[in-house]
Length: 161
Image 1 (cartoon, rainbow, N blue to C red):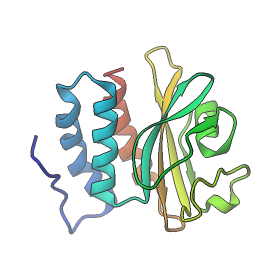
Image 2: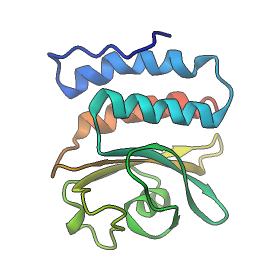
Image 3: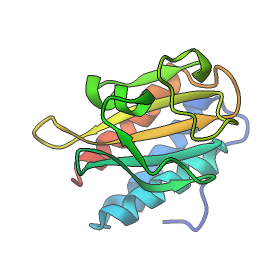
Image 4: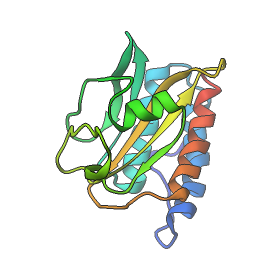
């Protein structure tokens, strides 16, 4: 794996994911440690897109517990039924929130967060192992291109669980 990511500067977000996905695949391909893989995925996403916050919340102890991430300090524990992360976990679906102030029960870990996308990561038995949470400091910053690109990355990760 190269020491730095190569993302064409003149591409849209879908094109950036297309360039990033094989690089993430190379990062996690020969690594069996989950923490290392989660850390590298979070780092690659932060570096490639300069998201405000990107990281994982892992399902354990009856709640979502903060895992590897990039960005400012974050909420440490989130109940399964609270906020966008809890909703994604409970519904087992990707949730895009254009304006976090409009999401009922949103947990404000940072007032700088304006929009968010959260995606579930599944065990082989279709239970949710964790969620990937990505926040932006811009309103309406996430689209189907993000959902598609991030889901492709998470499907690679699920094969390692």
